[in-house]
Image 1 (cartoon, helix red, strand yellow):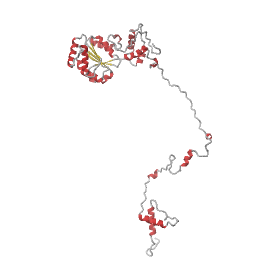
Image 2 (cartoon, rainbow, N blue to C red):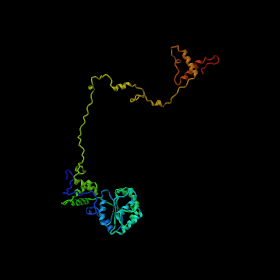
Image 3 (tube, rainbow, N blue to C red):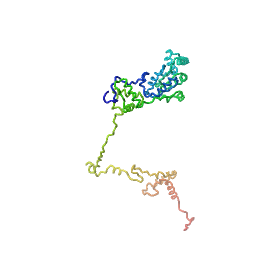
Image 4 (cartoon, rainbow, N blue to C red):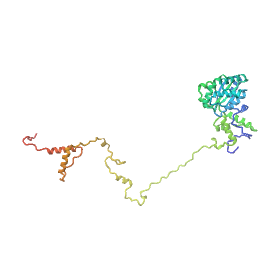
Length: 383
């Protein structure tokens, strides 16, 4: 054992007992935690009770080892470890025919079916066991295989076990699932873990070994799963000395944030006016004063922008000046020409501009054209 590794107190070992390969049928004594399911299926073989089982379990849960050990309870075991992508139902029957009768398989599906049934009925002493390891099969080929072979399976006197994973089970239609019995591979508990480790070490050690409950719980936490495959991976690294204790989640110290002492922040005092450089003229206005003198205050001016924004004036309707007649313009120009020599400015010499300039011009012209009242026709009275 190398330093700084997980230590379960294993005795001196002649070889690594934690093999990741599935158990063989003569290694039934190493199968732990599956006794209830094993006894149930063994009774079916003994009493020749034909059945169809879907064995569901994660990768590394021990499905293949379980079916291998169960095959020791019958004299006829057909093992299928692949499902073809093309014509999976026919290829399945060909594999069974090659194992049971002859490697030269016929291509006729009816002949395959007939020959297999006859052979299984005539040559059996116990109920035949047919195991199909479809854990790594494509789902489409698995679905096609089950549909095309279901009629053959239902009429076959055999115990048929098909190993699949939970993802494959969730994709199979409910109609097909009802034609099979479901069995699951549970995880190992504390007693199962202790039995698995102690039995494997006993095969390669001269000294007895008993695993404590604390070590079993620690192994379960390191593997993060109670399945045999995950447990064996950790044990292989421990025996090889490659499972570093410092990298395991149990041995790493908890992270503690550093304690930061509170330090009062020293705020520098603002510099006084006396600290200004000598080159600065005190009499000169600062930038803020220059900006203030640059703007001329007008009604409605804002301090932010300096624009005169009188929204009330914008709301008033715009009055357009009336166009002056051409005659008035001619007369107005003549009057300006006659009075241009006079430097004295009167109300009549001023130009007529604005909205009411034309009306004012007409009134003045009308007054000038008005002659004196004829005598004798009108008499002025107080009324």
